[in-house]
Image (cartoon, rainbow, N blue to C red; front, side):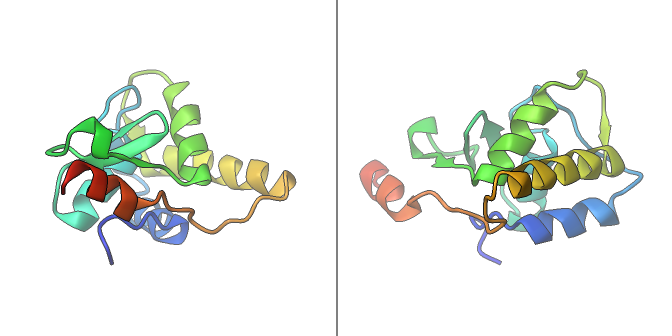
Length: 124
């Protein structure tokens, strides 16, 4: 898996594997469920900030746009208390995101930012 690919099904599978484990904390850049998953699958530390995600070692100007589902998931997770989030809780939230996007007629596919353009601009 390319470490920059954010795949809904892969994230969902990871949450299922960690159903009873703490998978992150909302309100943090590098410890949200999505950033913990990205860090685990890539072997690099990733952060998530609003609509953007990227490696912790990169300047934020090099961070990429999240796919629509991940952006909505992140926004809804931010609404939770600052306590630990289990895989089950995150999975429940992800299911709500999928239902909301489905009801709006959105596609479930992961939409990627134009990473080549962003990294070329930053010289990475």
